[in-house]
Amino acid sequence: MKPLVAVVRFPGSNCEYETARALDACGLHGRIYNWNELDEASGRGCSAWVLPGGFSFQDRVRAGAVAARERIMDLVFRDAQAGKPVLGICNGAQILLESGLVPGWNPGSVQGCLAGNLAPGRTGYLSGWVFMKPVGAGAGKCPWLMDLDGAPVPAPIAHAEGRFVFRDEDMAGASELAVLRYCTPEGEEAAGWPHNPNGSALAAAGVMNTRGNILAMMPHPERALHLFHVPPNLPGPWGEARRTRGAVGTPGPGASFFTGLARYLEVP
Image (tube, rainbow, N blue to C red; front, side, top):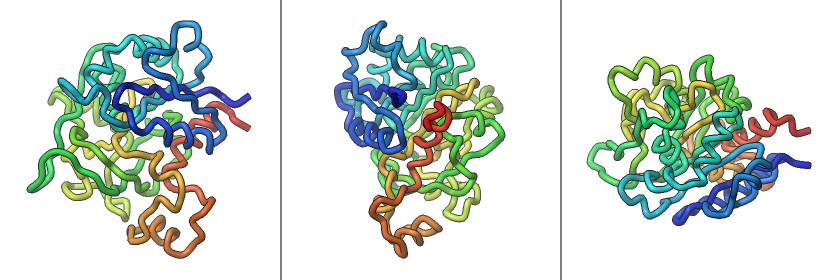
């Protein structure tokens, strides 16, 4: 039987179907649950959790703030503390920070935030393709990053509040947990815009908790699941592959995030 991965749909989520299909394509069973559907008993059958992208509760107050206080997050919190893998993508990442699961120095206490984008001459929502790569020894213990080989990974972003921010006194600790960082197409550190698209501290595209089982990331790997998702004009090896190879049926750069989980859960 394939491991069950719960994909939690909140009012306003809009990436749940793509996320469930990505899990299915990588040997897992992604099942969509409404935020008010899972209970204590049924939730125990989940091997992992994914909080997909979207605009939960219309991003009122702050993005992810309302969803983080829904009772379903008590189950996510319980399983996360027990070591089960949890992934938050875009709005899901915002929910994880608002619930205090990431960075997780003091689980349940909010110790970081995703603030509004900082881009020259722009405010509000940004979308486009970016590059990121795993950084540091800690990336190897994160189930979602196990299949990344250190090369730049392209994927799309689509957010208005994607800038990771931490207190000055927490920056050293945050540096160890910012295991997924924006980079240039050649893999060089993103020194600023446009390669760091939102001004995120540490050029962080994704931040894990101290244990490594939870990852909050802003780019959308489910939207880069297949090679045909990659724009033909994208620079780097993935763009070249898109231009020169048959794209149908070929895994894309985002698949590695889900195959990493499958390997962690020992899917044959």
